[in-house]
Image (cartoon, rainbow, N blue to C red):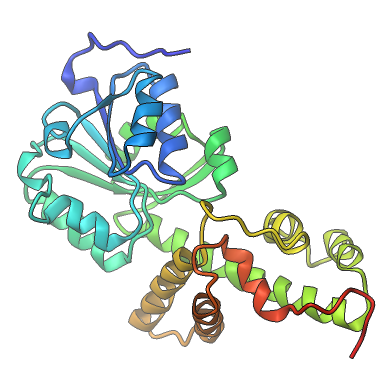
Length: 307
C-alpha cells in the first residue's frame, strides 16, 4: 500500500540517492511507510522505475536538494559520497541551511568527518548511519544501524531509520557510526575466513561439512556469520552476484586497516584478510558474494577422500 501524500510541503519530503543492492529495498520502505513524498535518483533507471510504481518520483540530484528536508545516500564508497556531494555536478551548492544529509554508505572515518565539516559550514546537518546485516534484512526492514550524529539530529532521523531498521543505536558523534560498521565488518569477515578454512580442512580430513557446521552451531563457534554466511553460502558453495561482493568486503576491510594504522594498532588479522580478498579478486571472484573467498581453499576433490 502506498501511504505517500504528495500534497505535503516540500520541507517534509525525503530524497534518496543510490538504489543499489541495499539502497533499493531501504528506499522502498521509506516510500511505502513514511507517509512522505520520496524523490529518488540513481544511474540505473530500473530501480527508479520500480519505486515510481510505488509512488516515488525520480529527479536529478541537484533538483532533489531543492525539494526535500532530508537526503539519504546509499553509495558504494566514501569516495563516491564525496563526489556526489562535492564533484563537478555535486549537490553541495543546492543544499540549504537546516537540511540533513544521512549517509547510509560505508565510508572511511576521515572522509566522513571531512564531509560533515564541509556541510556544517553551510548550515547543513549530517549523520553517518551505515547499515549492517544482509540484503534480506534490508528487504525485511530489520537492518541494524549505528548512527554518528549529535543527539538532536539522531532524535530527528531515528523515526525515519526505523522504517527500515529494527536495531538503531546512537553510537556517538560524527564518525562513530562508521567506526562501528567498519569494525563490525572486520570481525564478520575474519570469521567468514575462519569458516572457509574450517570447511576446507574438515572436508579434506574426511568430515561432512554439514556435520561440522552443525557442531559449531551447538558449540562455542556459533555466530551470525555461521548462520548466514557459513550455512547459506559456504556450505552449499553458493556465491551469487548482485549481493555484497568480495570487492566491497575488500573496501570495507581496507577502511578498518586504515583506521587501525591511524590509531596505532597492528591489525594483523585484518591485513591477512585483505591478502585473501585480493587473491579472490585475482582469481576472478570479485563480483561474487563475499564468502566466495571460500573458493580459494576448495578443490574438485569429493568429500570423503583424504590426501
